[in-house]
Length: 50
Image (cartoon, rainbow, N blue to C red; front, side, top):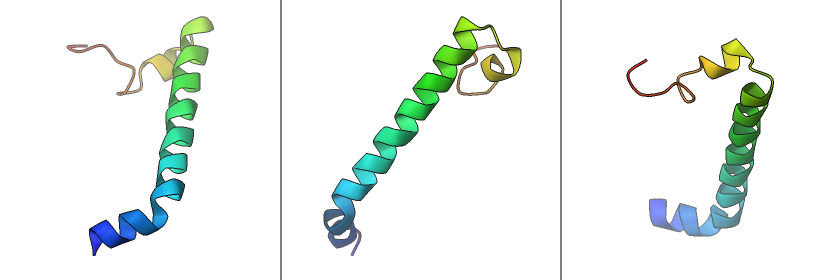
């Protein structure tokens, strides 16, 4: 069932994942360039052990 569902919506799933990846990448880049503290404190951008 999952394999059939994935094969049916594969293009849409991959497009959504790509869009989410680009948004996260852009948010991190924006936070680094302008040193926005709340963006850099998000768990996804925090260095290990901080």
